[in-house]
Length: 197
Image (cartoon, rainbow, N blue to C red; front, side, top):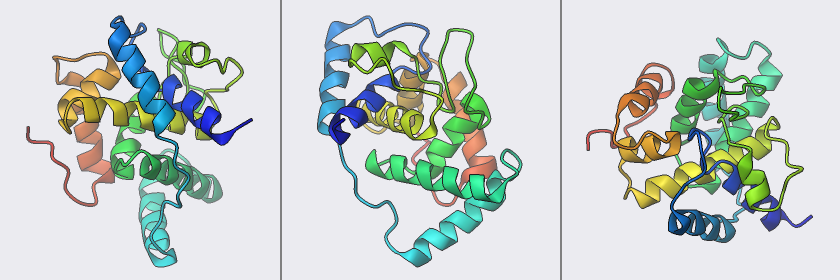
């Protein structure tokens, strides 16, 4: 199995994790597929050991309400940070999305069938020819989810409210993005993000 194929599969799976159906626009679907194919990047996510320790200790304390085991928290945070970094996303934003979507339950399944912590729609596995991918595996789920969110934020020119609404399948409404904003501001904020558009 090639890493690029796995990453592409993961990215496509998360492209519409919150939408009840596949993107109806064939151009949007093709654009997302192309985006996922070209965004493979395995760079280390932390600049140095000190940055890693500071971030992991801080976020681990914040995550304890959802994940009691410290070892599991640290593993989860490293996985989130790495997937977010590969997708050029703030990891704190990704943590807020996960909180809203699943409350850090890797086995969460929505009423429309979205799976895992980032609630990825399973049809994406077949769409990219990776039917055997397991969306309850965090590495897979985070890779799909982060790349899908990256795609929508780029498409919406960095507008967090519109990008998150597209991710959720609720473009035109701020209900979902406001929930993510509240989770981010209450639990995950470490700096500023451009929420005010």
